[in-house]
Figure 1 (spheres, one colour):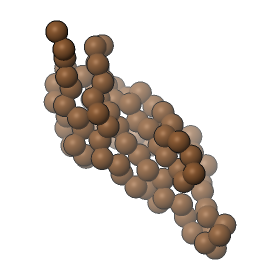
Figure 2 (tube, one colour):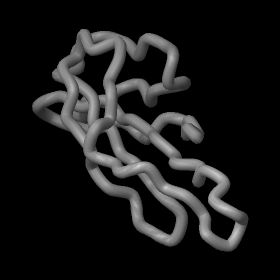
Figure 3 (cartoon, rainbow, N blue to C red):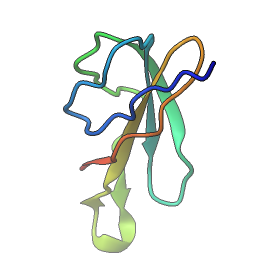
Length: 88
């Protein structure tokens, strides 16, 4: 029997029932998506202290945009990823 989770539809939304939690990923320019944290199902906020401040030397130290995305998971399956949320 296949079990499907509803894909997260926004980083500010609620994503259905029967989930164990969320996987939070981050992408910085010229890098691959990296798993940052596995979050409990009731998590409503997360502070990423694992990323040092980034600047773009070619653009006179303008801050680099970092992307985040999440997906829900349970003991049987994982959803698709949410939309991305850019953070400066």
